[in-house]
Length: 266
Image 1 (tube, helix red, strand yellow):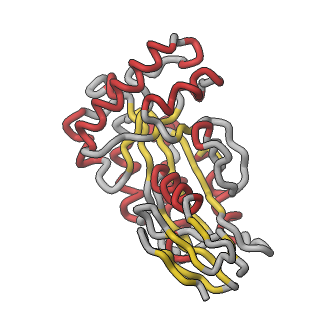
Image 2 (image 1 turned 90 degrees about the vertical axis):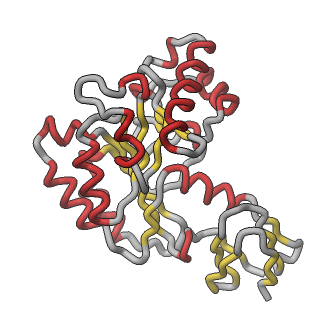
């Protein structure tokens, strides 16, 4: 049987995820725009800066980021490649602990302060409970991450309008999962006085039935569930051991494989 692992939830081939760093007070305005248009973001926070000048307070974080992902960015934003392993562990675990008290769920993702990391940093993150970490190395394409612990985004938000339009218009000859991943900082919209670009982007990208709007960790969990599917030798039967429903193409037909289910595809 001909099987393609080429679909996001709902049987669509496109997904949009957004990623914002630092937890500055301008997240308030940014989130208001995202919420109006049904977009989702992952917010990478430095818990050691809560309440400081231009940073959000700990008390407002739970309600502010409701419906989005609270993610780690270390406690105090150091250069991790210059930090001893013990310091990396403290920065990440303390940040996770503080953020989990706010979020009410395990914090499993992060972004690198200054975009700074090396192989040593990568090697320690799984032991610290981190399943993905975003870099600042934009690639300008709509590909899925090769390594979620060095997750390169599509673009910084300065390039989101052009690439967002390209994403909407692109129709690959052979449909596959395509991901538009935009990252940035809310304070940049304030500093550059260009909030209208965010409004334009959100209005352009929101409300499409053929796009899955997801947080970073939702993308990671879904791709893990896809990789975890267990097929019979003939591929006519599939078992989904994950807690996430998965969509696939079987003989050119969209099929949903429910969580925990074994499905005959004939």
